[in-house]
Image (cartoon, rainbow, N blue to C red; front, side):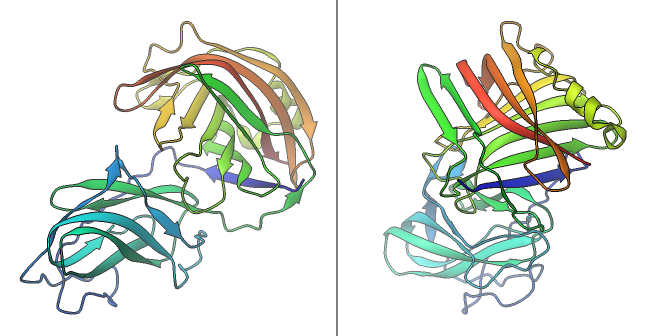
Length: 332
């Protein structure tokens, strides 16, 4: 098995994305001008709605490979389904997110269902997952586009990395696969003191398809990260029981944090304000030296957990029989 590993380092805890929504078009509906150019409004606009499920565009298809610091290639696009109530001209744009924009336009000649195409352009600035918002007069939804780092993906020795759990009685499991559709990720978030994460992440396309899931587990906070020795790094993951993280004043605390994306694209977290997880359990079973990535000291860590997960809509999941084997890294 060839395992692909992706490293993500973020030195800021919060990125504010300003989304500019543009309306209108001219008689010519393709746009060749820079992202910031205004768009002329046509005289007869169509009335149409996006098909969506919750906050996500339900059947969005993202085509293309997106890499930080590399201009978007020709042919990169988002395709979504719309329901047209009144024919006419249309133009739709996501606005500029992370240095990229997707824009399209044309004319609907009749009512009914259409698949529309928004072409991408720009240069992604940062690695990560970014939501590109779409909005019509009567509907809105978002499309997630993943941007990879600017370093090469390096094959590593075979290893068994996975997560599994039961959520409200339903079983889930995902492994890092031979086909390369899932990769092991390592994340470092913070400045002097950092939050360290690992996860099983989708890599088969630019966005997580419906029916697929992802899991990230993080542990905070490791002080003076750049100065710690390999032994101090390993001690941070000492086998034993740990509390779940709480947040005070939008600041990460100590303890464990789970973030999970379900098969419908809904994001869930173990964060529960200052309450934490009074009935939750989290145990690091083992932490073994792992030479999985050149130039880094790595630990292969096995974890077991049970807890509650929460979403932005107020939903709650009961997680039992949770288990993950992940990889944590630091520069040698």
